[in-house]
Length: 193
Image (cartoon, rainbow, N blue to C red; front, side, top):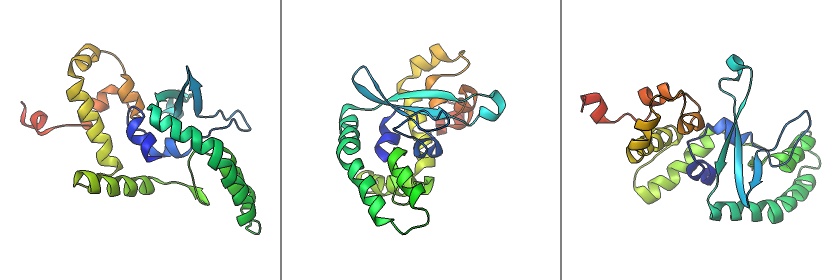
């Protein structure tokens, strides 16, 4: 889950990540894991604006090869065993059917439930503290990623400035206008430099 968040394009909303499935489900629920040209890709559903627009947008994100390989191995080898173990371990649990179904379909199950934003924030904080010497949680991560992309890809931003929405803004779950006003704002912007 953490690797998908930090390597899969724009910063995703955790609620969109944890709701991902790797199998098609009932009631037209489409899986979020796809093989495109020999690469595993996540296709997130952007639902934040669905009440207004009446539709859910699909946001494809390529995963790095090493993450794709690890996820493929996990789903092919470990996940089937986890599903069998869940059936045995939760045999007497009243929520057994729900738990087993989660292991059968959810891309990122967390024992008896799905992950929450707090879970990802804590994992991200643990690793960033250890390797960067600074605690970074999900909210900070969103701002940092957008700021880095803006600085590194400044020419691209200038070229795309007049577009209604950039890929990065959509992947972050908002429009370009909000992206420029609220995310990745540096001291230079505040000081007018």
